[in-house]
Length: 244
Image (tube, rainbow, N blue to C red; front, top):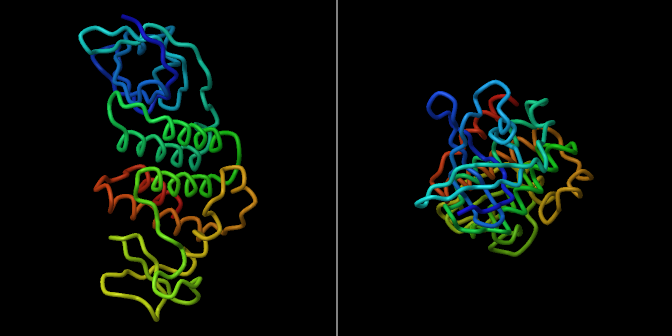
């Protein structure tokens, strides 16, 4: 049986001498693992469809629950992601979180739309760290771990001065209302979060944030996501190390 899916290559692993095993994230079927043959040979026709970030219409042959790529047409290569290290690392965070949070053969159209929009924005526009922060915030919400009101959970006011966060319940507190179990975050991180909250990727271009605030915000969002999922996002560590 053959099926056609629109999918993003989120992982590519060498297999045997000339083959690869791809992890695809598709609109129609969610995450799919598929073999692709002969793509390490010089001049291989499907080499373009075997690299991370490739977005293609894939033709897959299915046999006994296993998939093999037998054809592909480019939709977008997102070539710019390979030309800039910040773009590359930021988009790698998108691919890795997709792989960690998606399940085999479970369609997740909202996650597909979010991740593809983030990859497009990272490839075609500036503000890479703001786009990544916006993606992480939306991903957290979509995964069911959304932050509570950004106002103080105790008094209901916007927080000035010291800011405290309770990871267990995703709540923010001011210095007067803080409770046991909170951790302090910088006001710089909190104010950056206020600025990007609710913005789509194009709107983020108009948000003014300095590089230090962007980095602190990404660190906070990655920390919170990892605390909820118990996954380690290795590409985020690589990004932060490069930025520092």
